[in-house]
Image (cartoon, rainbow, N blue to C red; front, side, top):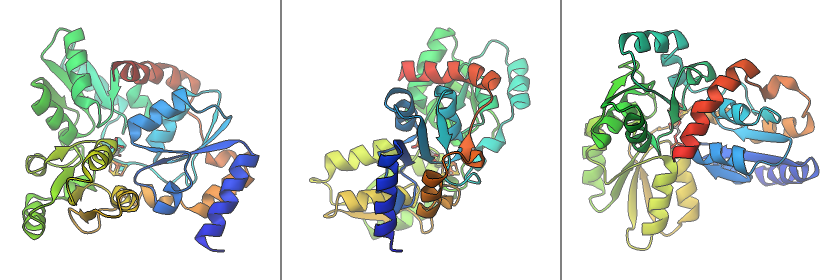
Length: 314
Ligand code: 13P
Ligand code: SF4
């Protein structure tokens, strides 16, 4: 069966069964093409809370995204096409570690990046994504009348939020990182900028400080997409410092522009574990609980507060 045929079958099945499909920008392009909603982690969280009006949601993203959808929609079935699709960054921070940091820094607000487990979110005061981290740090520090916050698990995002907000962000832990973004080096950027001197450089805040400081724009996947959309008639070339899926989306949507990956092989293998065959299987077997992501109600109840607070503040 061709990709096109498989996509058509999926579109028919999802209509018949009244299912919606959400996909992150890092998904394989053939999955992005059949999604009802495509977005960054903040946009997809909002969508599951505000627009997802079907009993079943197929979520083509990594585990923490599906868990967030489950926390916000305990009455719905959140289906993940491949249950091995996880974000390794989440493993850098456990609930026990958060409790230890809280004991060491009593009274400081705890901000947890959504790229974390539900149990870690349950220990936090508020969550954030890459698109609202700076704003959340400013708001919560004001609310707690403090100039310091605890922030984890991504040390690079914590560093970025600290630089932009002027608020001390204690990293939980100092080595938490994303293996995709942290592999981009300053030398990579210097080299690619030499090759394409007229290109604008867009990078994700999960990149290291030296890389971020060379960028024209630092932002979430949706922020980068919107920047290209707004500037595609004025700027021809863009260097993209994030996962290749976003570049593929941009290349399809803006065919007259040129896009270069900041470094070869910027692939999140965890995001790429989903495929069209798995999505079709789920549509045909919606009662297969192996593919359902369900956060236990006691954890979901505690984790819901910091997520909802984030949505309210951004
Ligand atoms: P966004 O919030 O930009 O979607 O990023 C999520 C992510 O996992 C980045 O690696
Ligand atoms: Fe996690 Fe990095 Fe993949 Fe994003 S790109 S899902 S942070 S491993």
